[in-house]
Image (tube, rainbow, N blue to C red; front, side, top):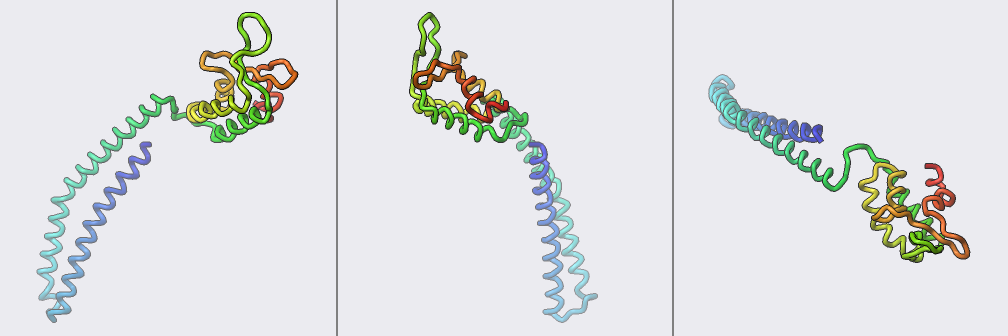
Length: 201
C-alpha cells in the first residue's frame, strides 16, 4: 500500500510542477506573439518579457510552499486511509499474507464432486446407534456449503485450511457422507479418495 501512496504523491507533485512550467511557457508564447503583432524588435520587447517571466517565477515561488503543504497533507490522509483499510481487513479476517490464488476453483470443484455423489450428508450420531443425524441430500447440503465456501475463499490461506473448515460444522463436528447402500464415511476421507486435488494435498 505504501508504494501506491508514494505513486499518488509523485503524480500530484509532478502535476503541480507541470502546471507551473506550462504557465511560464504560455506567458513566453504570448510575449513572442506580441512581438510579431506589434512589429517591435526583440530588444524593445525583451524587458516586458523578462518582467512577465519574473512575475510568473514569483507566483511559482509563492505557490510552491502551499502546493508542497497540500501534497504533504494528502500523503498523510492516504497513509491514514491505508492503515484503516489494513485494520478493516484484519477485522474481517483477511490477512496481508500471500494466499493460494486457486482457492475459488478448488472450493467449486470440491462442492461439485460432493453434489455429483447423489449421496446424503449428515453428522455421526453421538450417543449410540448407527447412521447419521441432521441428514440432507448432498445437493441441498452443497447449496448451503457454497455460502460458507465463499467466505472461506477470502479468509483461508491454503486449500488445506479451506478443506479442514469446510468438512466441519460450526461446532467442529465432522460431516459424513453416505452413498446408497453404503456405510457413512468421514467426508474428508471420502474426498481424499474421490477428488483428485484433495487426494494430492
